[in-house]
Image 1 (cartoon, rainbow, N blue to C red):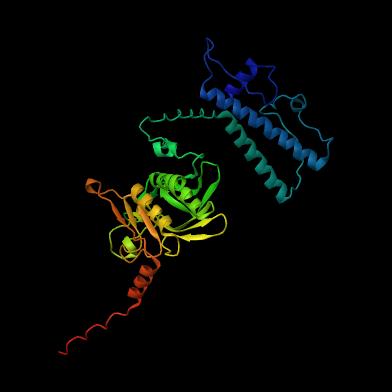
Image 2 (image 1 turned 180 degrees about the vertical axis):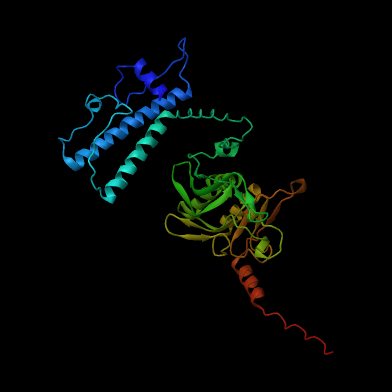
Length: 346
């Protein structure tokens, strides 16, 4: 207790509960023992105040207590405090114990310095090796040529798969714009490589539309039977990949005129000169032309594509038939084949 009395003598005007710092000679920082003594003195004062609370609780607010306590000071160590014996309830005793324990814990918590906050980690540097978002590919030369003045052909993402199927620089050819600004619809729209679409647009503008005027009306619609289609040639399973699977082919079924007339490219009832003119035009522009008389799979439409072959080899197989020739071809197709010979008995 000598340490506490020395502190009180050194700080006679310190208020009750005020922390008292003891400095060694020469203004040195207080030691841990000095700080602990100040905490004990504060707890002692809190305990006396709590006893006074109990006294008032039992005898009323006029109960007397020690003069030093009234003046806000500390109660001397040996000073008698007269408290009559009073029975307290169990709850009141338990409440007093909790208050004293809480006061001691709070004082201890206030005296212990908190650790410094951990500094924030520096922002992670962005590595220059990380791949950046892919930039949009610049338009191809074909895409720059195929403008809105020539056709309605919005670009599509490249086609990849399934299997060997696929096509780069893909467009959806919806309509061809003629020199007089009228439009020839592609029904349904054709999914093609840009180069194939450009060839179709050029053929419609320079050949098909002018030839249609020979029939007395302007061209209104080109009927698309097939464009991109991932399959083998002639839809045979296991056959070599068709140019349709590369977006490099178009099957033309028929033409529709503005007066409502329907013109089949393979219809023998259509004037021969008209059909012959179309055959010559497509064979000059496309590397493959397959129609009636080619392989039996193109009797009612004309297939055109831009397949690349060695030495620039081209195929043009489209028989422009007369009505009588067409009838003979139909009869030949309808003649039943002989029954297969039965297997020899074993």
